[in-house]
Image 1 (spheres, rainbow, N blue to C red):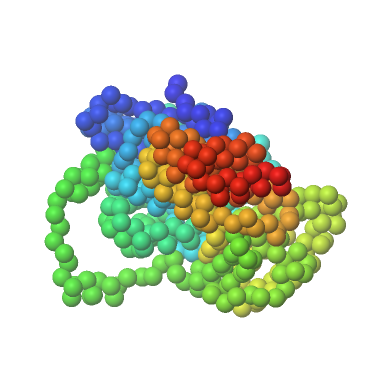
Image 2 (cartoon, rainbow, N blue to C red):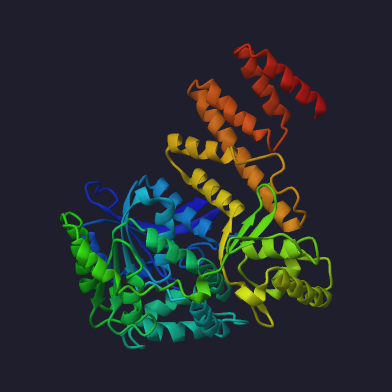
Length: 512
């Protein structure tokens, strides 16, 4: 069985028709709870015309979960790493359910690598609040459970029209119960975190997109999917008759035909719509995803001076009291979290009962600081806390850019991404934040940047580009005063007779 290894985590995949290089390539991304075997019924139709890559998401099928928390950078990185390992530059993406979210996120970072999207039963609701209700309805089925069996019984009965005692349904159960309750819940928590981001990406989408919905889908019914599709630029919507949610399972041939016709239609030149007709059409557009639940934006600056803005207005006071700064930063990185998890991550040395009591006080102060009575930014119950806003954070953007640089296969593009990153680094970037978890994050980022810069420097030295090599070695000194690197730089400057730089670094050595 083929696996690729990423940071010691095994990800299971299959590559069909791998040697048929004249064929276009399709990447299949399955939904949460299933695995690559869910494509079994439609696969024979695809294989007559295309090369096919299918893989198991982390913690699904035969793939390891790995030690890292699920986040969008990890999911995007897995796709990029797989395609890089197989030396595939561009694919059509066919994705089911929550796999569609991964597809969209990947295409947003690597649009040049995605030729088209075919999104099957995309799991998007009109607001974060609606999705939160949907997730809370499912969560009691797995909280405290050792198996996803109860959840599987609920979901599988709603995703296919096959009889519950059929071999086709039993195959779905076999894949679903391989997923731990913790992994399933973690995936859904992350989808909740970036649900609003998906709407923003819809409106900027430039990739040709097909949305397919089952006529009898009770989870994401046709009227809902059609409204969602209205928000996706460059998209079309098709209904698959005689099917529930898993259109490729209930009606594999019809689903394949729709996708193939969609691919073929990309070769047809379509005339521009008359401006008057376009204006008339716009009057019918329902602005899904921008209702009152979703208008709040919270922007947090961490790379340089700490600052928080809510809906464009800076919140200047209250951050140095009652752990407000630590809490808001934690919630920006963990938008849906339990009270126990916050206490464990921020105050692990404090008795849990006392820590939870203090947390109630801290949250009251944070709500007051954020003027939460105006914005309803924090949704809380006795156990869970959710930051209900579109989040913008320069440090999160920085991490995403670092992920892209690490995953980029073309060294010219990689170099440009790396240069942009190192220009954003200052010696004091988020040093004023003292919590253990963020200092651990800082240390981890520094190690990754250091490794990346050394990799780029070695590449340029091998290609006799001393100036570029020096640029990346100097960048490492912003984060690690490495004596070996300093001596290497002195040697490079001596080759170029740059006395001023030699003296600067020799003084640097004396101060270490």
